[in-house]
Length: 331
Image 1 (tube, one colour):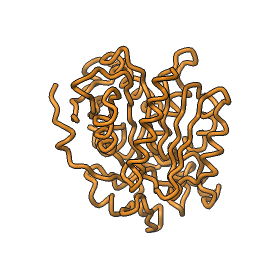
Image 2 (cartoon, one colour):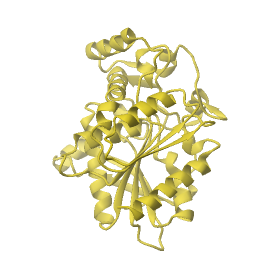
Image 3 (cartoon, rainbow, N blue to C red):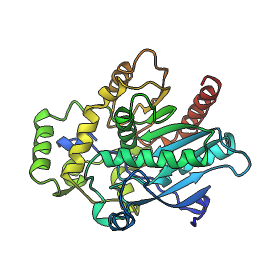
Image 4 (cartoon, one colour):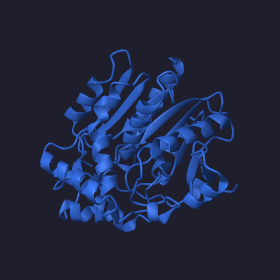
């Protein structure tokens, strides 16, 4: 297996989970080699036929063995490079914490081009995360595992937790960065129903986010918008299937149900200027987490949706790293 250094990879800011305001879909140190999704019980020919391999990046110190490993799940229309700022910060400030991030199925770096902008069954996302987690555990058997999901990645992490066997926790802690936990109040219920109906009738029909939004743009960081990022990101998917957009909407609406199942320490990060989710929705989500589960919330009033690339990213990274230190101290 071969790879290239993440330090040499060109950093790009990507668009996050899009829940366009005018439609029901809008509620929304080393580049490692490819790996095979071991959870999928297929023979070699079937695996090759479906391109069941996905790239990943890792930021792992060569000086010490990690005792914590963060597994990062990027957001909608995103890529593993989104974790580069955080990975580099960990290498300097907390080398005993490793970071792995893999390319999500159906997004712009999916090896199967026809699958980009689509998802067959959301359970495929959960199986992918389980497979990657087992791969990481094999490499670092003594390390505790933390799932970190940004935006859509948080949806996947929360639902994968809920679907895991209750007697076998799939990870030791969870970080939700800019989770979309509620469809915006200004999106009428009939539009959500219309999207679901259209997805049932024509699941593979594709539509662009620009069409869904009616041309409305969204501020993603202090100095970037969704449209400017889409123009520069090589992994941008121009059109997504109706079933993918409907799946994301359904996942958002069941986030509070997922919260009720969480039994490991949780860290929630949210920007006060996040277009997609307001602070009240975040508080509501946190209130559904059992009282016995340790929950930490961090709010960044002047930040937008993409916290790891916005002006307060150093504070965000510092808050995560202090939380990880406490996680070590209080297992």
